[in-house]
Image 1 (cartoon, rainbow, N blue to C red):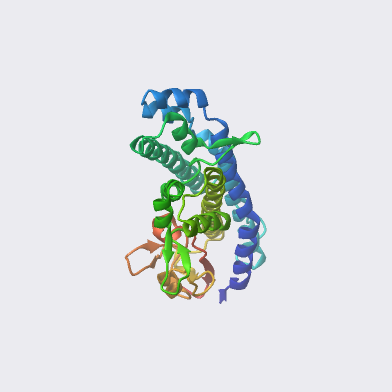
Image 2: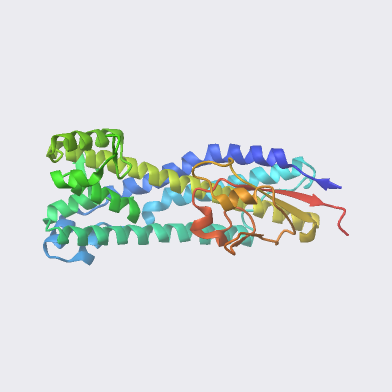
Length: 350
């Protein structure tokens, strides 16, 4: 006899993602707000004037403490997901009364410690490197200290800082720099626009609609984007890039918390009920079918079953993952992944 709570597993996964993803996104955005609010502007300018890059970075006060709300949101998502899956496991008859998710289990504690800690350490390292690259690029372009400081932390608008690279990863920060610098000259504007044989115009980079309209208007006139419009576009484009960054982080880290908690809840149930690893069958479920952005190897894995709780799904590139969002998959297999896993128990195995 095999117990297979597959449809309820898929439904619960969707419910948890819908509930928890906005909270993790809010936690990430709270970190960005904290970073911009804690820039020591006077020290930043003084160090930039002195050519002291490390001192300027120190004045940004980039600290793991900025991600406190994010840390709490991910930890809470893991705990809530584990409890929800434990309740479901009990409901379908794999577990019994008393089956619950134990956050004090050493594996659960280790996941929180390593995953959340690793993410925050990565964010800190990323922000420091983005700041260093922004400062170096500013000096290379001959910018003054104040302009470089604005590139880093933005301008004060309505009592709060807006714009700047804080919160962006390196690729997005580079796109922001390229577009905002190119808008300053007619030649730069031309470099942003592609004119097709049909006469239609498009941009080399995806930008927000208002910024695209300003660039195209300047292109048609053979001019630079006016300074006042550039300032507005700089803030708008930063906000668009930051939203995309926050969405990616939330989508990835929420699914990671949910699916790692699912695996841990099942392992705890196995220990409580005496279920052997070889009695567990796992099925990979692709999230959403073939789309313009799906991973072909993940789509091909859809429906694949492996026998054994510790038996991995092996991809053509050699990556072995116990379940979607297994940390062993790395960024290549985990960023924006919406796949999930179904577990069932085959009690007929001797």
